[in-house]
Image 1 (cartoon, rainbow over the protein chains, first blue to last red):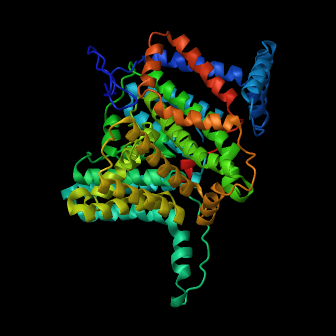
Image 2 (image 1 turned 180 degrees about the vertical axis):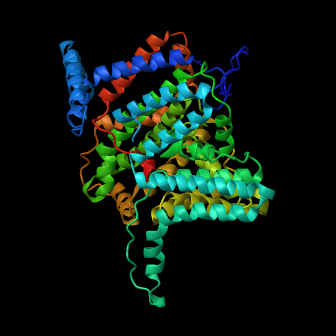
Length: 99
Length: 465
């Protein structure tokens, strides 16, 4: 067992340690951490479906590139049917106010 | 490979799954896997320099073995000279040829040819860590590593490889010796650090850079005084938001893999003295310079007032030169050295008493830091002079200042006056969330930052050092 900056099991959490982590930092087991990352990644690829499609079109032509492009197109079509890219474009335009 | 890119997202997912799958049952295989991942990360910049990186690692490991044997000082000097020689060649060979040899006309030396040298990304950081390993092993602060693999993983570990923080051998190597606990991953704080870093980089640093700082520093004569004023303040905010963003993200990614890096920035612009500023800014470098240069080479506070002043000046000038081979960096280091020496002589490094004194000391400290960073950013002394002259020349209209840029600069400055434990408070708010909800919150925050920031990512400022 490592991670000495975290609170040892069975001891009360502390505050005020001059570090980003302290014995009070919340921790998750690997399964929970993997779920958190998986959901965050899923939302990321949902919101960036157009950028992913552009990146797929830019891939060098090797074995498997066509499959990747087909997956990217399918994913972008699925997101477009939910109007995700349009919604994100509108938000981006609003957030760029004054730029 | 930059942190805020799609390719890094894929890379990190593979490393996260591979590392946590291997570390439980096969720690040695995990270290090999981490080394391979580090080299892949670095190979996105240069495959050739991967070999150089490995060579520096093997050099440090071998010198560590030799220096530890009967505390051999000779081997330590050879080892440190080797690492510094490597750094010197890439960073200063051209400067030395042009500025020193090229000006020795009385020796019959004319203008010297420029060498075609490409600076490897992160060279200063891995060389400093190599020196840290060799010195710490020699002094007994770190255990000597019999396995080259551990030293290589330490030096090449991808979160800190390109731009720090500088992690000491004594801090990192014991973490490799014991496998991390897979039931205790600080996901929430790591996420806050990564997203906070992304926010600072994408929303504040990138926009200040492209909106005002880069154009004004490129051609100060074309801008009015208010534009120049905002560019000077803007760069000070930009460099903090850029560099601390990288450090925060590095600390967060390392934490997701079960490794701890020390804090590197602690609201530096709230400092009311230069000595306090250096306890809050780039802490891993300032403590490295303090321990290995100020105390290790110049004796620290042991040689009276004049000795301390000289040691301070020499340390800060060396710190400036470390950033690059240019007179602007030398003067930046000298400015801080003089300011620290004056502060020490006046007894001003003690905390001020009373609101008026605090405000006055903050204003003075902050503006010395701003002037220093203008020197730091200026490509040459002529540009610095033009910027200073432009500040008092009201003949040109100031058309580059926009309310958005002013608001971003103020936001970047205000980060220093938010509660010091804000991250802990946010983490406390996230504590009870189910992993699905925590992942959704982080994913939406990530998307919001990407939507609000400009398209594309500029390299981090400290990659060039």
